[in-house]
Amino acid sequence: MRVLLIGARGMLGTDLRSVLADRYELIAPDRQSVDITDEAAVRRCVEAAGPDVIVLAAAYTDVERAEDERETAFLVNETGTRHVAVAAQSADASLIYFSTDFVFDGKKGTAYTESDEPNPVSVYGRSKLAGEKQAELAPRHCIIRTAWLYGPKKANFVEKMVSLAREHGRLSVTAEEMGSPTYTLDLAHAVDWALETGLTGLYHVTDAGWCSRYEFATEIVNLAGLENVVVEPAAPGEIATKAARPTFGVLSNALWEEAGGPPMRHWTEALRAYLHGRRDRWTVLQAEGPTREQ
Image 1 (cartoon, rainbow, N blue to C red):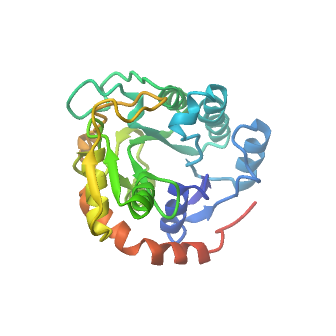
Image 2 (tube, rainbow, N blue to C red):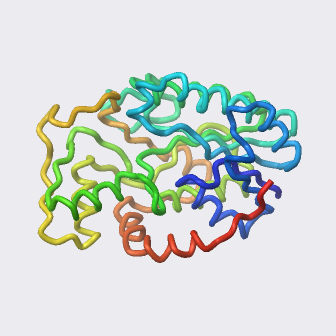
Image 3 (cartoon, rainbow, N blue to C red):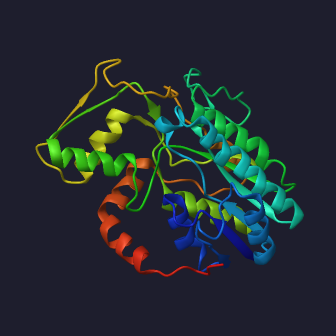
């Protein structure tokens, strides 16, 4: 199977590349070769690759900046996705698209299922939901909603907490926001299964279990062995953010498991694996050359 991975240098793309490279004929162009906001560039890339499946890992993901950069967020997440989906249609290729818990408002109070009506409360969430609609233009598509991603040596909540804990010795983290931390390596293995089985449709896929941001930060500090660091819950409203966030953004994996998808490990187990191996893994990943550049 020939797989075109767009966004191979991002956090998720890095782990997708490491997992898929030995399993498929993987084509992983860099951003200079294919900017998804450039329709002609996308068409040329897809025509040259001749893929059976396109995995779209490129996205605008800065939740805060999106509030000020609405046009850019929608240009990448909506228009860019449309370019890829239309090219997939022309090439008779399947498309895998990644979305987010931010398509929901977080008011349900229990885990969201695929049948729940989205109601995003931020520019980022609205742009990703718009991207979902564009991904559906590919006749064979798999939309995977996930949450709270962290991965190898990129800007993410885990690395931010480790850095701040070492610098200040004290963390104040919101306890009001609930979700399911998900290791990009685990999601990459899930994508591998989706590719192997030709899965189509809409699915929620996160690591198992859920927690607050405060509980997540506490576990990060403990598993990272950062002794004498104090982690405390922030007072309601203490941490101001420009973008609204779903307060309870937990996603249910039930439909994924009903489809035969491999169960995801618990978020604490995944976090332990990431923290214990992140330096060695990153060294290996950095040493790996591109699978194939176009």
